[in-house]
Image (tube, rainbow, N blue to C red; front, top):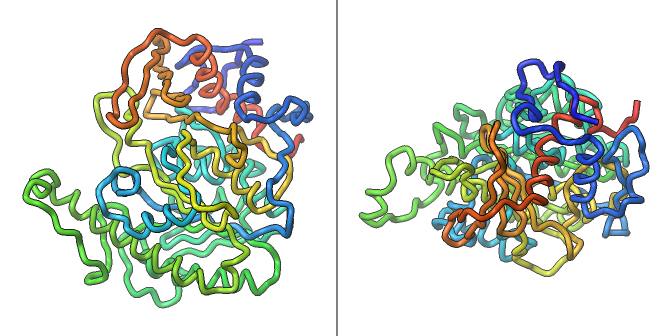
Length: 433
């Protein structure tokens, strides 16, 4: 069976027309295999990737807090080989389950939300946060947790309707939204809304209230201070000292970005220190992760280094570790559900990183180009061109061409086609009707 034409996507880019077609059953077979789940886990005939996932944690369900940091690439995190702008994240990386080679799926905030909150694979179309057919009954971890008795909440310092977030979240499992109008007496208001410091102060209030209600909760906190035009409170941080060589390297805009990153890091650190003293801390798993890097550029077909982002899980129940596997943003949601003790069906393609043989692969959409990386081997798909294969040198950030790997090229094609196929057929859901 050949892929259908996706007329209902309207103006959205058609992946099969761009990259080539593949038998539908073969697509399903390959993406199922990528989940690392046994064949018998997939038992729903109407939703091809809906599968039962068994949580690692078997005790009382834990709370979950995800903090999505705006525009924070690994290039700004010294513990990941970047410049020293995030001492607080560096500390957290040494205290929790940190990922050395975690990769974003795209270059926009909505793409990061799509990956972290829904576990959806990237496509050449817009992120599902903005698409018509995903505004209701589209899978998110909020909808799954709500079905499991959790209170669910989104907290943002700006206007939550931006990028269609409010509509998407309310239609897909988030029961409560806290945004700018709900933040009590913000001390600093920028173009994007209340500062990260004010956001986290309100988040503490909200988490305390959720904890007092007695039900398990999921709270998704999205920061905004590290965003152009980089407006931050004065005299909060001590900017790093630059050498003359560095000052020649960075223009005024980049230096403003550096200060905003330092402030965002400072505000995060203050929040975590305060949270550690609260009653909700002990039974709550925290994920701190970037939505995407600040910039994506370079001569490579896909600038892989600009997809490299920080991510660390706190209260995972594991000893501090720097996980050296290649990891995708889409792996985070299945991993978190496993850590908080929620066993349920979901259509996600991400892997539970608690499994020792999990991951080792990442997916990246860069404009019209798509990269599928397994360990250090990369297949890059371009519109109307044959697949190209490379070996990626992580330390040197270089791609060395190699002969085509037909197996990896087919797997890459299946994954870039899957999103459009699942969207059109409404397969990315918990409901088979």
